[in-house]
Image (cartoon, rainbow, N blue to C red; front, side, top):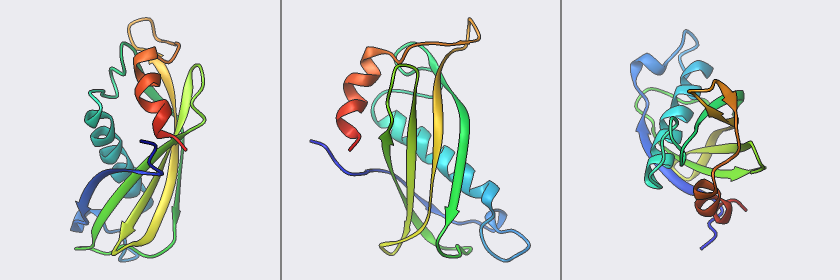
Length: 135
């Protein structure tokens, strides 16, 4: 099985997600990505602090809005992974409302040994599960 994107969760936009412009703020979009990432990793028995030994640290994040997002909107988030290499990968997020993409983005995640406080190799257990998932 090699899906284009994997479902990573549903989310209802709350009043606290809305900024002074009356729509979801970019900071809340990153929180949405974070929540989806936790759910996505959890589906495969991983967490941000353990992907088969080491954890993850974010080195880069991008958010792109296609449509405004409002309080009460029901969103679905889909994730896929690209650029999986020895020490990092890029996680892409597609956020849908009624089958229309309202925002998308990405985070570059570095594999990190939190005890030694240094970058380390992507564990084989993670590659075994994630490599077939990226297009």
